[in-house]
Length: 268
Image (tube, rainbow, N blue to C red; front, side, top):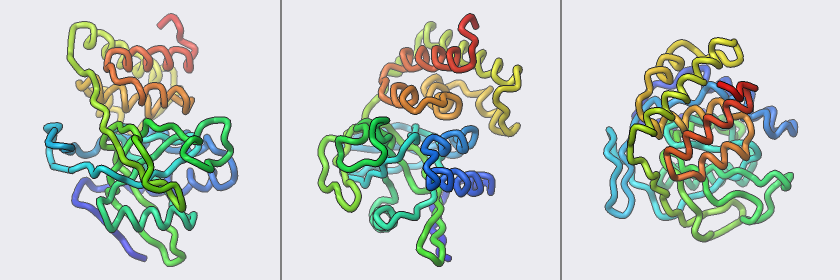
């Protein structure tokens, strides 16, 4: 067994176990089972400064986005900035992808496969707005499969593909959010937190206490919208819509709308 680990936060065993169980469901054909399994396990455990073409996002430690990264198209799974995604890598093409990522920048994108496609055959079969992530930890097993934790860094758009087989490699364009804060932004963020509180109060979603405290105290509207969408919006196409929305205010509105509709609390 080989372990690859990047300096960063300690990762709980629950992340590993949830990743194993979830990917197993995907292998049985329950394409959306993956999302429901990792629900509640997405959390920003570390902050990172992202740099691309001399532009930086001032956070704690520096990561430079490459111009080209591998892409892993998945059914029902998306990667949001700051979220953690456990993955089990077993297909030969994705083993090659992981090896490529580990020997280069330790990054790859997760892209949502379009709903009419049982499996992707070409780049037209998955969405081209996606999340790029950093491999925080990776364990390679004796049978060649691997378990890893991918931490979301930034929204990106695929501009072109250097290759499509055996796995895609895309030229990426980082997408910056319109994050000018206002009184309206604060009001929308407050409503999102209110809906989250209602979810806890009616027993629909229960999170571990530390994660609950983290979300309840979160003051960054952009991070709040992304993490609540990643954790609580169950429809993959709705999560894709949130991922594609660059206006933070409109993103918060989408999260409010989807949480209301999915929980049956339209009047909240």
